[in-house]
Image (cartoon, rainbow, N blue to C red; front, top):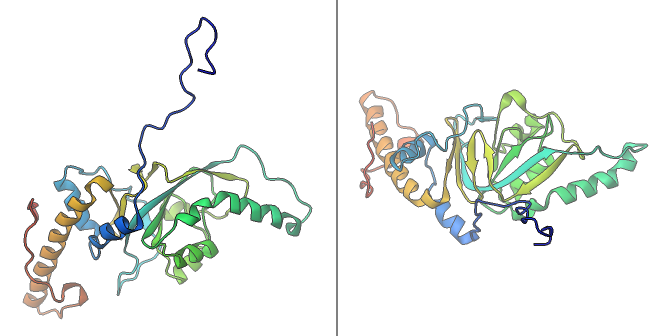
Length: 275
């Protein structure tokens, strides 16, 4: 090895990536995502229990929806994880005489830090592990731009500022409301990596994992178990909606859109215990 010294054992490699990141086609992602249409976090949690992942892949309770739609529940999202990790910078931004003089440098900084934007496609959820202090990852301009490319939402510990505008434009954001970032400061944070393993809410997120989020929290479904979990969760969901519909009728409450048109589902190959 190049760093070995004469008569001395070679030093270990300077770094190593132990977790293997897999790439999935748009067709593969689309097929898996259809399996999760309409499924709630509660259904996914029960299904994760069945496959032996109790409490392993549910993010901390402080990762909450920025806003809620109580009529159509459009804050609910499910999608494919595209991961980004932010770290504090080890140098300060240059000093400029005016903001106008700073703009070309700022534009170049944003361009260099945003290569991941080209990976956003319909069904993507951007999952952000932000270790930079009080610096956000995106604002309303970037959020709306990525939303226009098919992004379904953002999830992370500190992701988006401009939270009033993000709420107004109904872009789903799941983050800790107690520490919403107040700025996006070029030069104060670096993008350490994208499409690599990260940790958010004390849960490992691998690129390509399935993210399901609603007011109950954020579930991460490992890609290797995505189809199995979806099949069980679908049965749980449909069974529960049928039972809820019958309760509506029994208590003389008009049925709403969440319990209309359901028939008794066929049980999955592994019937879950459902109470």
